[in-house]
Image (cartoon, rainbow, N blue to C red; front, side, top):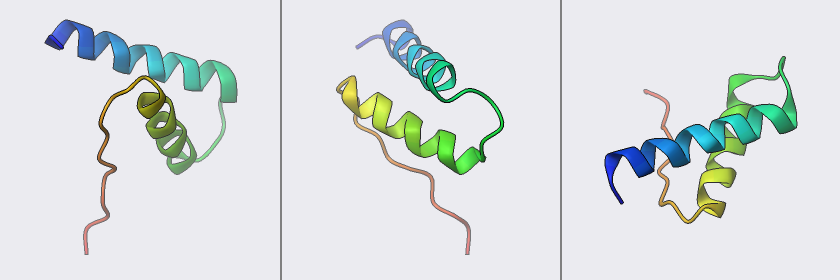
Length: 52
């Protein structure tokens, strides 16, 4: 997958999540929804981890 294809897939996922959920939710909700969306596109995802 090229950089352009990867960027397109991520942007597509972001728009899909936003159009489905709308605005006003916590960032963590959008993050989890985006992870689910990107995995459904076949991408390997590693979630961010909080600093200790």
